[in-house]
Length: 168
Picture 1 (spheres, rainbow, N blue to C red):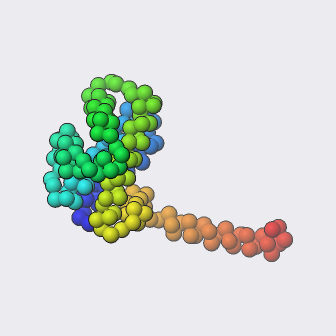
Picture 2: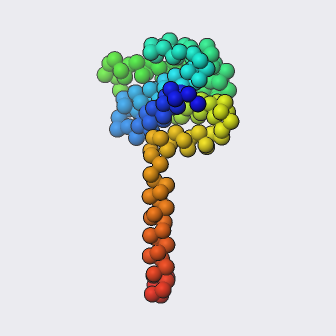
């Protein structure tokens, strides 16, 4: 996989995770849309299409080249349009989306990300789980698996000592 494609996926995933834990509707919308914008860039780059920096043009490129992917994922184009428009309002005004709107847009982000992840995983003969594992390891770090292993060893040792003392 091309370095730039993977970097866009990693950035998009980090933004999606940020959207999920955002402290306000405005931040959730901003991070949620930027997440799918980066996933749009990733799949366009993977197809050999230069993703413009103009978000509207990138949105249109995505629909023209991957409209079938969006449809197959049961994502309604009008919902994506509303998300884009809401993102623009949040960026350039003091608009505050309702909690319900925000939640629906974060869910929409997940649907887009999932569809693109499935497509890219398929292109590289990987399972979705394998690709997600790679991306999450980059975002969250791979140190946790070794940390958890050490914690497990310590727990086993304590449990063994407790059993010897008759506490278990």
